[in-house]
Image (cartoon, rainbow, N blue to C red; front, side, top):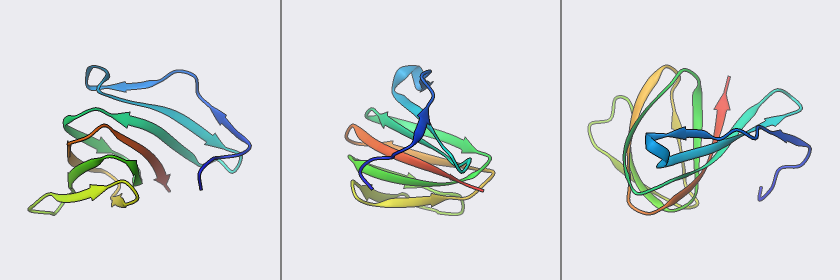
Length: 104
């Protein structure tokens, strides 16, 4: 899906790590929520209360998910699942465009 129809977008940006990671929240009529964002080159650690699907639209990064001993590579066109109530780490090698879907 290249675009979302019939949604509301929260104008205020979500800004993390001194502006190196930003996103906008997209709200759907059925109550679901996604964020669309950009990550600059760097290393980041995130925590999440809800399960997430991180779809990488473009860019290149390594992700280390809970329970993994090593990082794995992810590039544009790929995605990964993040379990609820967890911490995950990213090493971003190129400016990365992403879509995060929150799973209930």
